[in-house]
Every structure is written in structure tokens, then in C-alpha cells.
Image (cartoon, rainbow, N blue to C red; front, side, top):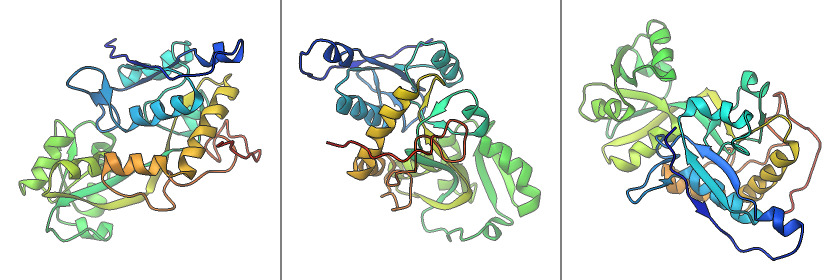
Length: 279
């Protein structure tokens, strides 16, 4: 397992008992190849939205944090084996996953989104992609959706080895649009002035949340309390705009404090009302 680890230490009062616990580092991990959520820095370590997000969470908890970079496929098994306290990687909350881990509420929405060449007619509905070529990253969830729905909506599919290659196909005029995740589409637009984010498939929207082990209710609740405070004071929204180039709407997950603890309607959700201590 490739490891890019870094520790950030924060001052805390030297008090016996509670202070000793507070100085224990939070152990977490990301997929370090998933820009702009987590990707390598030129001078070593990782950077990105999720790195900034959970570094700030740890700071507010008065704890150091160690963030490993690892393959996404191994993250949940490593969490359940006790290697990590929770995962800082963006993990889509699904009912199946919620049977095996305990999620915080969502701090971002993930959704399918189209990106188009600047100056092209915008996509206002699925009718607008009829007869068009749609570029996708080969083997991705967006590729699978496009292959399954090309006949229904009347578009053709072009597959590429990476999402940046699919974006380039749009900029070069080989494809009308590319379909990808909303954050990667928005990030690509910040890197290429000829590419713009466009139509969002709202029916695909889901929570990106932090998973904990099923037995760590206290840890989940403590981190969720901090995330809620960061929503209330605008910190998550500011990080989102910094990394994805778009100011979140008031009803986006960056700004919404969801009821209870966890993702409403999923296993592990605790509907008990609570007030976050943001002092």
C-alpha cells in the first residue's frame, strides 16, 4: 500500500486524562489519486478538498491528524480492521454500505453532471443530448450509465482512458459533452477556460459522507458535530468554492445541517434531535 502520510500537530492544554486523549492522533485515509478531493503535492504529501476539510475538523477537536494515501478499494476493509478511526475519502453513502459502516451526515452531494465546451448550447433537459456524442471515462459508473441509456435518449458514447481525456474530447469538438461526477466536472472547468459545467442529473444525487466502524457511535457523533458547526459558519461552503470553483447553493449539503446523526433514511441514522456545541 502506497503511503503518503503527514501529521499536523495542534496545541492543547496540558491537563491529565482528557488532554492525553486529545493528543492522540486521528488516523484516517484518502484515495490520493482522486483530484480535487485528494492528490499528490509536488513536495510530498497530499492536498485537496477532503484533506483541507478533515484537517480543519481535527484542528477544531484539538487533535493531530495522520492522513494516509491508499487505494480506495482497500479503505473500508482497513477501517473495519481498526487501521483507521474513520475515512476522510469521499465515500458515497448507499444503503448497502450503511449496513456495514456508520456514516456521518453528508458534507457534499455527489451527482452525475455534464460538462460542455464554452459557447455550446446548454443542456436544459435530457432531450438536448439526442443525436449528440457523449464522452465518458472508460469503466466508470458514468460509462455504465451511458452505455445502458444511450438507446433510450438517442446519444452515442465515446469512451476514453481517463476523465481528463474525455474533457479534452469535448474541448476539441470530438464530443458534445462529457458525463462525470459533479466535483470533477467543476474542477476540470477551473483548469480549462474552454470547458464549463452544465446540466446536473439531480435524480442521481447522493451524500458523500465519512464512514466509521459500526461500534464507534461516539466518534461518528463527535465528528458530525464539528461538520455541522463548519456548515453553520460557512467553512465547508468556502472550501467547496475554493476547490470546485462554484459557490454552493443554500440547499446543497455544504450548507444543510441534516436532522439527527448520519444520513436520514439509512441504517445507522439516529433521529434524536441535538444541538451542536460550536463554542
